[in-house]
Amino acid sequence: MAKKLSRRQKAGLGIAVLGILMALAAGRGVHRVQFWHLDPNPALVWSAPFGSRPQDVGIAKGLDGQRYGPLAFAHAEHRFWIADSYQHRIVETGKTWRTVAVPDAVIEDLVYASRGLYFVDNQQLAVYRLLGGRVSKIIQLTVPPGQTEAIWHLAADGRNLLLEGVRLGRGQSEMWVAKYNAQGRLLGVINMARSQWDSPLQVDAAYPISAVVRSFEAGPHGWLYVEAASGDRYQREVLVYSRKDRLLRKMPVLSPEPIVHSEFLGINRLGWIYMGINLNVPGHSLVVMVTPSGRTTTLKVRTVPVKSVVYGTVGSTGSLYLLQSTNAEYRIVRWNLRPGTRWVWRGPHW
Image (cartoon, rainbow, N blue to C red; front, top):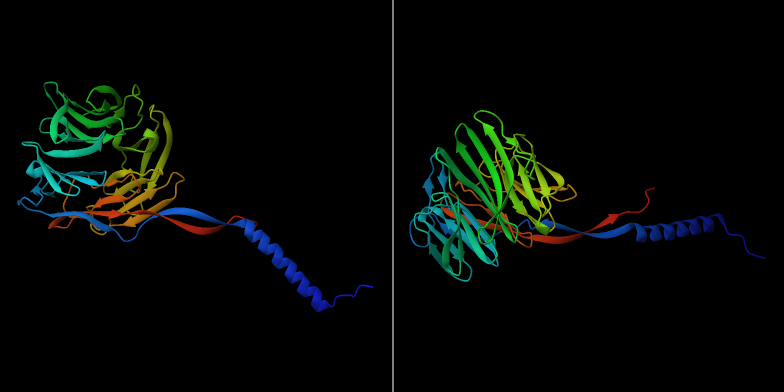
């Protein structure tokens, strides 16, 4: 005949069974999840003093009274290209420091693509290619009489160049985005917005990009990420277009600080958006990163006292390269994107 369990033994058995059940549930409910984050300790990767010596980079005062250093930089294949705009040259750094003279040019934007460096000179209203140490003009814009034009932005999607410009005169303004191949042949206009004086810009529905474009960057899969023009104090919106110019999604970028000025820095291979906010506003400078799922991360950065046109770029591995210049020195700093893991409960809740 079986021996009856005492009350204490029954309680102990119940606790043991409950413990086993909880352990089984925990084993099924707790998962290790990988996530990505920027390294909190940035590294200085390139610097040069402001000045006029051969190893310096130029600085000048603009028409707005602000100080400007090199206006743009690009990074690819473990090298940097610096647009030393006011000394009319390109500085290329890898294992050695090399300069390429571009007389009479003031380089305002540049991008590396198709094994060449492409740069904009608004003095000549042209785009040039630096390949094998040789500079050649590949795009020359022409302006009708009575109008003026400027190239605002240059980007590349791996195969083609994307050019943004503005044209003024004859009582109206036009903003346009056009696509060229790597040899400089026009493939088509993908965005056009027009306005009469003192009236808002209106998008021409005949073109596939359906917003007034402030800036844009190419992302993974050849997708185009377009920052729409906005006066919202706390938000920017990025429109994502496929390689065939079809709108895929809209991604809001929210800032904890009132936005005085935004800089679209780039996209990483995971589809994260990197947006610089108030990079010249003391005490309010930060970078906002938004994942495709909408998760937002902010990074406080030091204010840059010397202005530029291009303030940062995103490397192929997701690292952020950002200007962190001082009054005396031009400086590029890198934050690496690193993987991490954490335990997440996905089981039942008691």
